[in-house]
Image (cartoon, rainbow, N blue to C red; front, side, top):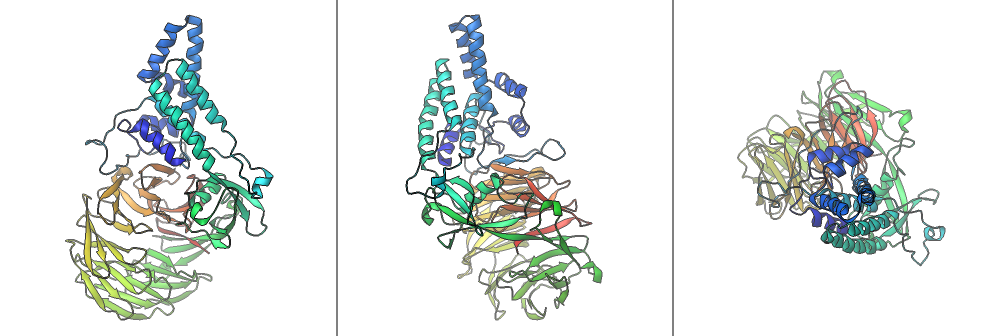
Length: 625
């Protein structure tokens, strides 16, 4: 269904439309109208004042064909149809929350699909009637399906086709009236042909019933395509306000089908889910960790109702004169919290009681747990990387070999290797058990600022102040690809969950870029608000990219098209960083205004505001309890 809609969009906008991240609108002025709640006068102004040459020709033809009275009636009917099409809100899972103070949303630069479009990046303009048709089609297929019959919920063997869409029928009638009024025959024929394809694809959709894990009762239904994954089911629940509402706590969502966990990498068809089948909804309560320049780390419980507030436990690094907190990390089992302060002190805490357990031996400027949580690794200011025992804080070994300050460190997915980057422009691979330097990765000409492993551990990525990123074969210790395109230093680098793409971000040239990890081709460039990118991360399923920039909002982009699918407003200062919940449905943001917020990734609605810090919040993690 989405593919067919995409075909329509491509048909009407190819080499003709300049997008700014808002589907179906051709200019920034149109996008501003889209973000506002359009009144009838707005619709009429956009229909008449922005009419295309084809629309004007249609109106003139009506004047010539009928007498004055009849022509006026036909004109009004034509404009009514046009307004109905324009008023349809585009976008399946395309939402945008308005600023809470009613102010105009921040201006957004359009993403650039690398290697496509004209030389200057422009694509001209599109006719308003074409935008209207596309908007109506998107509205039709983002509408909620009708409630299933009782026997359908029971999962009977015979599938009933979905009822005809009233909006689809309305559009069909509008096309017929436009054809009778002399509208473009080419456009009408294109739409008529695509309507038939869309109707057929709609009939191929499957209705999936959601069962309560405790009671076994049906709590809702979601319509999806066979090629969709569990992410679409979660999105459908969030859009219908069935989960994570004000009246219940926030939770991570998973599904069981046939006693098997439904993985995000498996499609519904591959899992054997058919129309009318039921899946069991499994909820896991969430909590959130925030760190601030006020010298505290807070652990928030998110399982309570919004009206009851979010209870939190405060860990104070500054109580011992350690200064502001630079980072905080939770052990994978959720029992131990690690904090690192600006004075170089690392502290281990009991997450349940808030009691200090141990202090790390030796200086640390970063800290993270190994995948199994038994070790802690941290970069330090003395050109070394240290490995500590996660229970006692005792230094197990020191990894020495860099000629400059170590700026980044990462465990491999299996916890057996370490990847580090330093100020001398080198990166290195180490054996954790022995502390042996396996290979020095040389090629960058400036500070290595960020490093990452692919999910399978076979590839390593490094990003440097020299403006390039590199991918290395871990077994060979050789560079297999260089990524060039950023104009200034790269701040961060990360692999997509499947390891096929690379995401880089530069706070200095103000862009985030997605690359093919094998070919090194830049497939997408996304400019940040205010020409600054503070943070850029993949969603857990790799289908979205989240950007925190020089503005009070967060933006969520489609990782394939670069379309801005969700914009989140509410902060009063720049957003410093952000993170996803494990299921990708909750977004946490940390802001210089001293607050943290939790958002619906499906709708952009602010679900919780976490207040209590007295300084800028500089890190946030959303975790399962």
